[in-house]
Image 1 (cartoon, rainbow, N blue to C red):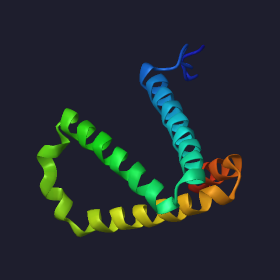
Image 2: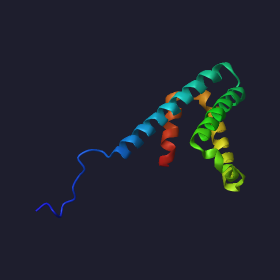
Image 3: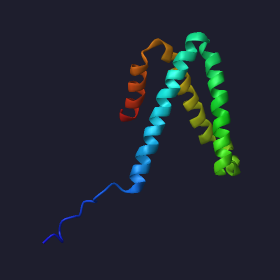
Image 4: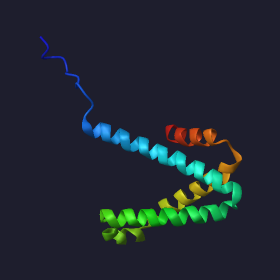
Length: 118
């Protein structure tokens, strides 16, 4: 009798739970980054704040890349698509962070989280 009906899983698979946890941590890190940049921008010119942020992020990601073995593929950095992606990502981050001191943090986070839906 129940052979034709698909069975619903009794619990969420561990991969989905792990992915949901990682996404939640990423969103928390994003909000923490915005809040930190908003506080720093109150006392420093935005370009100095960006330079400080970028130096810390570069060190963090270089460490992460070294720990995961991603530095073995350094030749892919010469590909034009990588440079194009890096350029557009840099421009987007710069414009977003330049606007950040001028809007409420809640508005900035809501707009950024809604952007992938558009």
